Image (cartoon, rainbow, N blue to C red):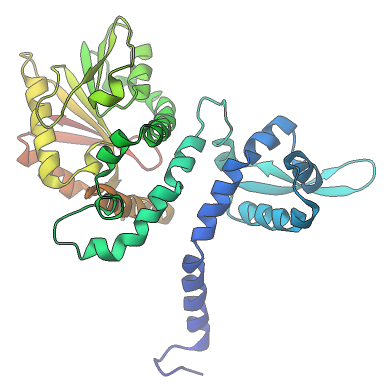
Length: 358
């Protein structure tokens, strides 16, 4: 039987399921936060094998009244891909247990790649609370960010005023940068032949250190906000320089912009790229800019990757008035900043590497 709007009951139920799923979607985030805060991936890893519910609640010292709730949480996290429910055998009977998956392995502390700091940062109540201001933000006429509206200042100013939060932010960005090691293993060709490189917006230098280790004769500079790098120590071919990328950028054969441009509007990106072009052109030879960022390509990407890119686009817009870009939008930026050509290469699951030439 069709409803008043012409939809049959099956279609309406599907719409209801989608609506409820996203209305309750915040619980997915909170379950992830719960898992990380309790260190459950670490517990299973240290256990040496899939862990039963009884062993897990014993390790966590969960009150008996909450054992059923823990089981519900673990079942949901298994359904969403963070654990695998398996059967283990002992001398008495078969038991259900929880094993790690690729996603939860990325949350084990002490591993070279551990994204737990990133999860903790993005699920911090301060950041999450700002997104309740999306209605006010979308009607704002002063081009404020959500942080401007919720906290009274931009993110970068907030970080400068709050050292503890700044530390968690830097830890989050550093953990994400460790993923670069995996991706850069296949990208050494992009850095061969360079005598110097400056990583603009390079944070604490995790990515730059990876490049330095692979190319010990290359002079590497991390160029970032003065209050972030002022107490950081470099080495013979690795240095930290504080400054403002909107004013000038240290001279080098190449400039690296890793997940930097998506933080900024088109006008701001144009200015940054113009300063990059000046930095690589002043040494008397044809340098290049290397951009590691998102390129939206709905025709080629699978549905899940496209969904992630759209979420990132909303995040960048809300927090920084930035954006993720299509190839056509990138091309327009490069041309307006005075560059002559570019090439796009796959870099990681959702990122691309773009070489830009003056």
